[in-house]
Structures are given as C-alpha cells and as structure tokens.
Length: 260
Image (tube, rainbow, N blue to C red; front, side):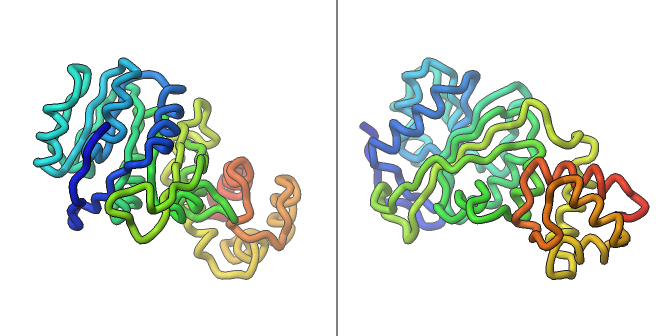
C-alpha cells in the first residue's frame, strides 16, 4: 500500500487513505479504456492500484519530492511528470482523466478539463458540494448548464473527510464526467450557447418567461417556446434539464435577432 507524508498546504495535499474508496474509483476507471492521465497522484494511492489495469499512465504531480518518490515505486507503464496540471499539455489522442484534485484548485482544473477536446471520461475526487453542484443535485448551476450539451455529470458517492490524511475540513465526492458521443449543441455554437446560458442565468426577471421577454422575445414567442419544450413559464433556470437547455437555445437562441 502507498505511504503518505504530511500534506503541504500550498499544494492542497490531502492524501486518500481509504482502500474502499480507492477500490471504488478503480472500478469506475476499469469500465473505460485508453491511456490514463492522472492529476495529482500524490503518494500513488490511485496510481499504483491502477497499474493493475495494464494501461499506460501519465501522472502529473506538482510536488517534486512526491514525484521523485512515486517515480521510484511506479511500474514501467507509468510515467511521472513534475508539472502543474494547469499548464500541462494534454495529449490530442483519446484518453481518460483520473484524479484526487486539490480542493482549492478544483474549479480551475475543472474549467481547464472542460475546455479540452480529447478525453472521454474523467473520474475525479473533489469537494462534496462541488460534486453535488456539478452533477445538478438540487438544480443545475450555470457552469453545469453551460457544459451539459457536451458532457454528462454523475455524482457517484460521498467520501468522508476521515478518508484523507491530513483530513480536510469538508467531505469529498466522486464526480464522473462523460463526454457525450453525440453533442446536444454543435461545437461551432459552443461560445454562443454558453453566452446564452449566462445571459439567462444572470438576466433580470423572477422566472424564465420574464427573463426571456426582457431579452427581446415577445410574450407570445416566449410562451410558445416554453410550451413546445415542456418548460413551465414560472420555471427557474436551475430547473431546466440538459435537453431542454439545448432545445431552448435552438428555439430562442436560434432567433439570433432576438437573443443577441
């Protein structure tokens, strides 16, 4: 089993020590195929078990001491690089991303990953509340809605703080992200779609009908669009599903003279 040392605060190091969680993550990764890029391997709590999958692993570790120690213990199929994941050049070929993300960098790393085009699945250990929000539990956030046409987000379980050493101040959660094989919105429309979602989430009005009307659509057009999509006029942006967002963009957003 991997060993751990005291985590460095500046790197947000909380090492996973619960073997049950390690096995759970390994099970999700085993359902994928292709090379693995691991973010923040630390002392190898996930790296070394993943070697049993007999796939190539590239582990990106910002701490030079941890990188050197893991390099000595890893098998020949694992390459350990001492780099910052926020500047790492991810491969263009299809791959899988796995990682126990530094909690203070979770959002920055997620944004970096979501802008990439080549990975198929990401299995990530993040803060519990971040995992819940990204998976749309209790309603979608703007960030989730902005990326839903290209990804699905799945909350796979809660990880208690005691599963880490040193224990963080909050629980973690396993977030699995899958790239959609057939996007709900064309890649060429990504920027315009994301701006549309941002405008709806941040626009004035107490519900979707008011928000869309204040963006230039007539009452009749708004009610026709929402009715066609099965969305209540009094719905809030967080209550709209992935498919409804894509179709709303196609109906309301395609009227570019109205939604510019």
